[in-house]
Amino acid sequence: MSGPEQAPAGVDTTVPSVARMYDYYLMGKDNYQVDRDAAEKVIAASRESGTDIRVAARDNRGFLGRAVQALAEAGVRQFIDVGAGLPTQENVHQVALRCAPDSRVVYVDNDPMVLVHARALLAADRAATVVDGDLRDPRSVLEHPGVVSRIDFAEPVAIVFCAVLQFVPDDLEAAAIVGAFRDRCSAGSHLVVSHPFPGERPGEAFEEIGDVYTTTSSGSFTLRGRAAVGRLLAGTELLEPGLVPVQSWRGDVPADFTVPSYLGGVGRIG
Image 1: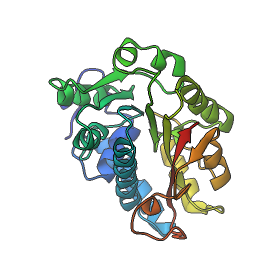
Image 2: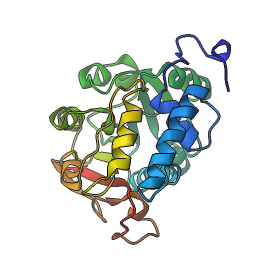
Image 3: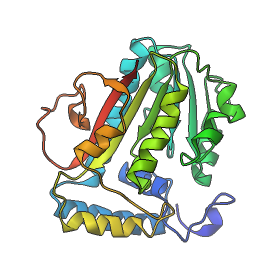
Image 4: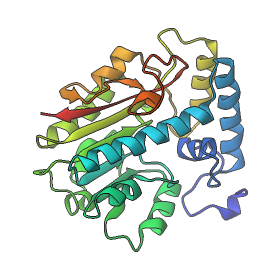
C-alpha cells in the first residue's frame, strides 16, 4: 500500500503510525512507506540489541492467543481489547469464539485506519465490535455506548493491554489507566498485559528505538523493567507461570529465556 490517494479518510500518511508499523512487523500489508521506513529503523536497532522486533511481535501475538484461549476455556465470555491495533490473524474474537461461541468482544482504538479496517471486518459479526476510544481516558471507554451495550461488568470480563502501555510515558499514569479498568470489573475478571522488555540494562540500541517512536503518532515509547511491568498487574493474582517472557507464557520456551522481547502476564481480579 502506498500513496496518500489510497488512504482512507482521516488517515495521515505523512507520520508513522505505531499500529501500521506493528502491522509491518507482522508482515501485514496495511502500512505506508512512512511506516515501513520507521519500522526498518526499529528492526535494525533491535538486531543490534540481539533480537528481532518482527520475531518479538509474532511472539507477542502468540501470547495473546494463548491467553485468550486459556481464559475462554476457563469460562470468561467477555473481552475488551484496548489499543487493539490493525486486524491480523488470530484476533481476539476469532480465538474466543473458537473456544466459546457465546463470547462477546469489544475492540478499542483511536487510529483511523484501525477503525476503518476493523469495522469492515466486523460489519456482519454480532459477537464483536470496535469503538473509537483512547486508553488515556478510561472513563470514556468504559462508558462508551458500544462497550456498555456489549459488556456486562457484573460478570467476568478480560481486559487486554497487549503491547500498548509502552506508549504511555508516565509509570503512574499507566498504572492508573489499568487500575481504572480493573476497578470497574467484577471478581473473576482478568487483566492481560504484555510490555516490551529489553532486560534490566537496556543498551544504546533501545535508545535508538525510542528515538524512532518519538516521530510517530504516539509521540513516545517507554521501556520498563520487570518490577514496573509487574506493578501494572497490581491488585490481581497472577496465573501460572506468572510474569514471564511472552514466549514462555504457557508456550514451549523456558521461563529463563533472556533474549530481549516482551514480558507478559495474566492476573485474576479477586
